[in-house]
Image (cartoon, rainbow, N blue to C red; front, side, top):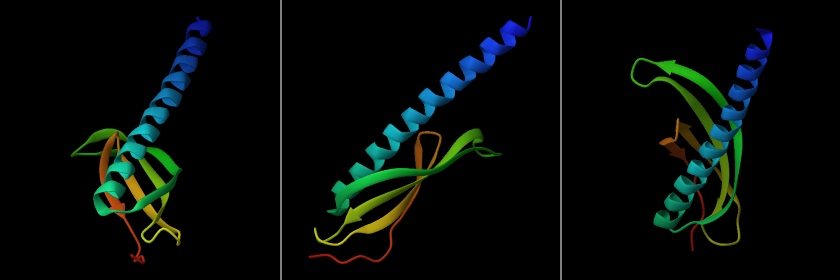
Length: 100
């Protein structure tokens, strides 16, 4: 009987790994689209945290925060923050940056 529990834990671990990969791909898609619309140069993306949250509006979901680097003038480097709930974009925060 305990073998079933081991199998269940292993399957949940695999699912979580694949789901986090999907979240990273969705974040990259969102930040690329945002940078293209704002005329910014996208440099890199890194996950800061992912955790399970529960709200009355969304129910249980995985809340993820990403840091991304961008450039407004092609020479400087600035860091913004992207937050996702599930695979959906919640918010993008950018500092003041220099433009051409």
